Image (cartoon, rainbow, N blue to C red):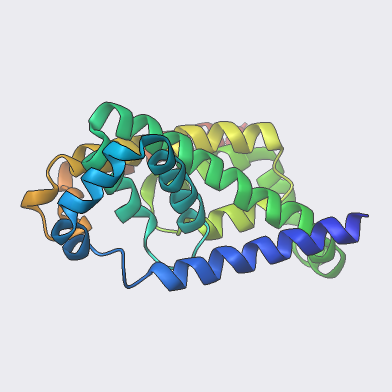
Length: 220
């Protein structure tokens, strides 16, 4: 039974990957802008379905190596407005990260630990103790793609509770930035224009502050 469940999770991951590749060329800011009227009409006439498709797209691209999650979250603000777009962004991203974590932990973790645990025991112990801070920081600074964080967290020994909290806190700031950017979509040509120096500096400072408890633990 466990083997069957792991098989289904592996298939789900492959579906995520194939879907993200299929939609890669369609989800560009230029394509969205040129089809704005048609998409707005579709959302107006099929609001619940549109929200569902948004959630599914965001959850898929959060677990994809292709850089499309940011575009999806900008579109959340563009088509649903800042308030609802922010709520949808945070919720869909959070759920997507949980799915990626679950696939990694229940489909890959046992095999990974069987083959590599002795080699990385110190790293595993460190992540088990301070994984909340490490994964939260990685979410905030956006140096590592979310799909890699989801996989790595699933393979680690971080508790599910700590992972949930670090993920919720980590994905919220940029989800809000992307939703706000959606309101300015007509004036921007790339996602990078949303990452103003003040935003980047603020996130880095928060990340550095979060490391202080880890340093204190090690010093005591």
